[in-house]
Length: 245
Image (cartoon, rainbow, N blue to C red):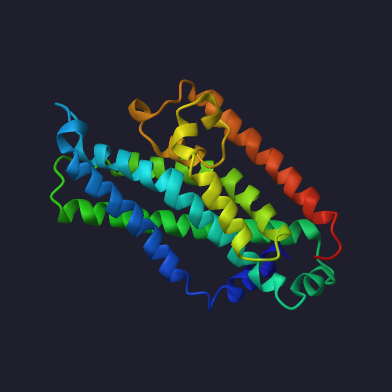
């Protein structure tokens, strides 16, 4: 049943021109990162530093707390858009499908969209690096690890934004929420609240250890996992208790 839901979700998004978001989001994050890196090259580079890692630090800074959360807000709004038009929720919920399967189908669809965005981010990061003559050996596996960590840390945010998108009848509300709570992300990241603030968790996970304010990674990922399960249970409960939207 879940497989069928995922297939239907893919069909509904087929005409959404997602490729524009897949390209523009990562391109913006990488572009701003390289501009800031070369503008402040002497500040970022110290003897023995790897240029690729230092550039990635800037990618995490721009992509993690700004571009990625806004993309998540757009993606979650998109997967609910068709249901908010023309009584789509009534038709969907009238079908003999478990509510939890519908919710998980939409959640996994957004996860897939985030993964695609992050893979494209990796391609742009490496491509721009070679074009701009970044020196040193490319620590590919380390960068991939940062990306995987960023995706995992994005899961609580996806659940939160999805719950908001399901409850909102307009496309603008979840996007506005995403933008409003993204704005203070950099400030919050430097405080103890940053580790439980869903809009900063991706940036903290994507950042190299020596550039991150995280004191205990065991505690950080415990908080991410705890936040994920709390939001998952709440999202499933909130969705299942509604008969119509």
